[in-house]
Image (cartoon, rainbow, N blue to C red; front, top):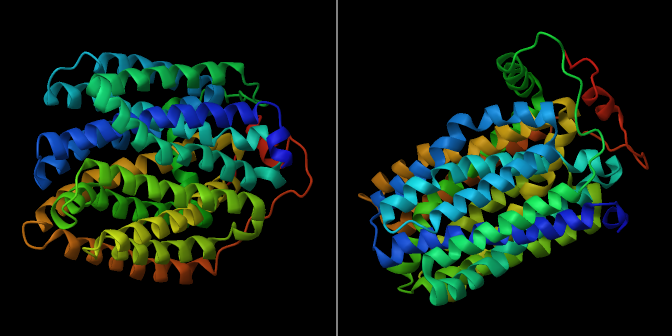
Length: 417
């Protein structure tokens, strides 16, 4: 529990739990608004996800440049303030088209916030506590999945979708205030004279391309993001058309998924670095495909709840170790760009996969497509697991205090290669 005693870290956990809860409330509002109030078709849901994913996919990688240049704390504060302003604008929307239009910047703002947040733990905690910090931080964020859907149902019932966006704005404000109070060591780095933003962006892309561990981890992430994008279209339709349930069951399934995530994140915090291995991430991809297939492959509500809980468990086994590996494979000087690239892969996968999922539903059923997508992810996971055995495992600096060798690079040393 030493990581919880690091100055500012417990406050960061609180801020992220509150902030992410608000984001889930607004997401559930938009998601449920489309599927249950407007009875949107698979094509309509696909269009919604594509529209909301475009800004983050196209511009997301560039967000890492200001994070590395000005520091993750400054950019986290900026992202939270922008998120608050956009959420306040959404409270004034009075049509589905206006909601989609005003929600466009949220994908980019969320990508900036998440990439900035991922760059903070290596600067805030000792290296041998990094996986625990990531696990607790992931648990705090995933706690929003547990309470967010229930709060969304409550807020929507009393204040409607505008109330959901007002709550989201308040939580963005909390996130900004928490970030302002934090002291992040080694916040800024020395910038080489004459290096343009475009060159910095290319350097980050080159590092991800030539570093085997980064390339492999980002490849696994992209594969799982593709699976998640397909399920973003399928899940509300599955609840409505296969389980023949309503918005409350849909929200409860998300809650159970979140319970699996949070409980597993706490276990990973206790176990530390034992599971920060590429082979563990490959195995988690295999398990994620199998449990996703179990989840959408049944018409039993009970089995669906079991499947979605297990899916949450193995997603945590992917996400916490993968975040730690990205931080350890990349020098601190590049954390913003690497993490921004990682978070841009998710909306990019959404742009590609959600239209394909909608087209596939013209030919096959929701359950058949869900099972097929899960089995494809399982086969891909087996392939990635075999390749993982040839990758080096970055070891932590045991008992080391900040700054570590990676922070020395981040403070102006030469980049690798």
